[in-house]
Length: 640
Figure 1 (cartoon, rainbow, N blue to C red):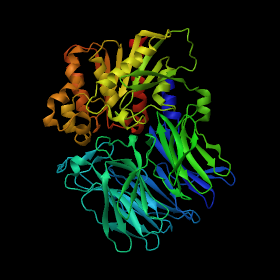
Figure 2: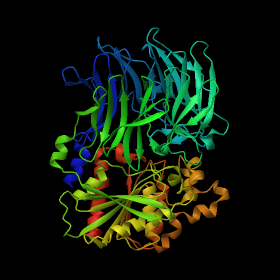
Figure 3: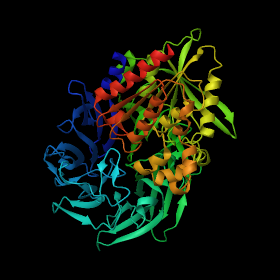
């Protein structure tokens, strides 16, 4: 279908910004598709705000994460390049802005990608003469003759692939000496290096410890640049997304989680850690979700951060103990870069997909700087959106309903129930590609944020733990029932779509009711007992979410598995999954498909070669187009 091809091939995405205040230049990463080559591209552009001219800053088609040095002289970035037939590296480069000299500072046995943080894994010091980066050694293998020797539970990760026994390390590169200094690894993945303002220390995150395979706790560490000593600062975090120093270097601020039962960074808070006495304070007074922000930095003793509450983003400013709202536009704010005079941010709103905006601190006015999809959305009007709520079992459950742009309430429409992943994902006030594809194909879409969804407070988020398919299922069902009361909803033509946890829930639903006429199931969790031992997060995540250690909870895992209720399924289904998905392994989809097929059900399994769990954002475009085409065709067949 041409509309699907247009949405996948023509939409551009902006994923990184960096501002040079000295020369008044903005650098940003824009991602696009080369449809002829079936290839994904990432370019770094430079917007000269003195003359409003935009130019390609770095030659090449696979460059990302630009970070300008504080003095504006050098641009650090990641270049993806193929070294040989077996190895592709993310190499760290530095380009001198004045001379255009470009050097690769990492050797060809290192890749700038980590087990937790593949973006923002390097940072400048304040003097612009050093850069710290996280890397992992890459070894060439002959898969036909060498066995994979596994000693750790966490020996592979989705998207990244094989980890083995190698750990993330941190190097500090000196632009003066042209040499790198390695921080000795002490048995964990070291990530998120950030220099103190005076340059005497490097703070970073590590998950070292004898039981790191099953606890996944993350600690703050300090490296003394003068003595070359590494020291341990804090063990209070379950997951860390961002860190930064106060101007005085007395406090380290952390965006992350501290409760072992809420390790998903989509429900993060802001914490302060006193470097001297190691005391920790939770600064989240509102219950909002603090969003990861790799450019987190104090400006004039204040900190600007993106937070999300009930699926709506805002920029807030923290100064001393005061918190104030700076910007809100019923949108999703993806990244912030703050400076003395301006605040830049990437926004996805209901009118456009990924724009760069600037907030001028002198007059608090906001202007749009870069909008790569403006023409696209003039030609393809976004869906219409409204929100509905229900009251259920002590909580207000919110849904977003998306209507075709030519919606007429006198007509009758089929309905698709869109179920997010996570379970701590969330639907937000933004343009989502799959919802646009569905509405452009003539469907209304309801996107429910059931209990477990992030940005509705910690208690709401943790309600889903050990209860997959319980109250969350009822939240979705009753929300659909409320919308179904509208005369324009055809109750005989309602279908389900979900991916990951959404795949679990869509499979769970059709095992508990025959209300729905079709189910498109993406990368599902089907058998929690087997997923515990095959998923890259089966241990830590599974034990938090499903009820403890598997061998102590086999019956509980079985009770909460859609496979247990497969004999009840009458709904036609199509299952779509990548064959290199390590998060929700393909064996989950295979078990469900084989059982349904053996029972004579109308079911089909689609395996995408090389696809990982993030395949919808990372696989070759033709495979993504195929995914959505099959989904729409399946709904057209069973709902029209």
